[in-house]
Image (cartoon, rainbow, N blue to C red; front, top):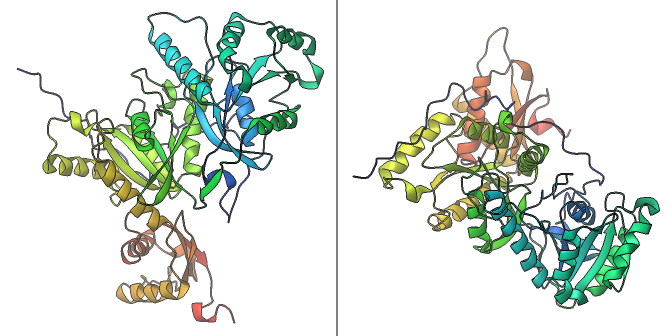
Length: 502
């Protein structure tokens, strides 16, 4: 007789979502930045446009030569994690980069390791990394072979030999030569027969413009087309380690961009991928698993988790991945709280649903009840069962995502808002007393995505929280924002809506 599986631990929390202690989510500053991020408020950023026929430019080399630093330099912002520890990058990290005003598909690959502990889990993962790197090199139009000024290692020599079949598309760049430093040692690479060596500093920017010219001169841009200037719907996949985030990302993008392995913490960088569904363009951000702060032992994991959390600043919809067999954890609530505060749409994804003993409607209902207990203030958020491995539930997930995005980007005119506000005030007048008397004047929508409103009142400091909750519920239910967070601020004003411009 088969051993009966234990039920998921959907235990009742001791505190509400609003009270969630987020101290176990890493809040330390990101590693020092050397490039100013560029933001586009109105127009779609060039890197967010949908292209076809982009030249593929791959940065390759042994570990710790500065590939991720160069990748970030080309993008003019921090995307790939940089650290002195060898082998930080595992999954190929991809992005559209604008070089000399021309778009290319840029890839940062994992480092080529010569020595590996045969038979270990780490060695198995290293093999995956090397295999994926070589696959990218084979497909590339241009390969930037990044070398380090200094002692030439066995890994350098073996990797250079691996590059021989691709010699006509290789650009050899020797890194860490800022201000002419180590140039004598850098010339030692000339013996391998490179047609040209360029000495650069990815960290300090030395001769990066010259390297950019060499790259774009090798690229064929004749087939590049902009197929869509519509901003993609950005999805961040968040959750604990081993909940199936990378499996779902690969399933959605019909790719193997993210390495899937039982080894906990496989994903470190935020791995991006794109796809189209229902006439909409999507960008998926596959993130590192977020563990409790006490269990984060090294800088690399710290930065991985920090990057995962920072995807909340650029995404539209969060897929909070929850293992349907293991159940919820306190960390899920903390992730959800951060997403809620930023006004991101959230879908609770109960992954590995195919492994549950009961998969009927009753089981789904029971899971929803437990989820609503755990996330007391998130009863509006969709809860969807899924099998990322088998693809079951994907269509429902994407249809729901489009619906939430439509709510996120919805705008209500001021006149319509104030007609609705007057109806709400008539239905449930503001409570009045000698010490807490106030008048609600008017309301405007401050922003969409995240959706926020401002209500102007004569004495905002005395408006009770219960009445603010009432107004927020009316906004959500009556104006079509019933499945996303709604932010509401009360400000002071003694001017009536109809008199505000007089």
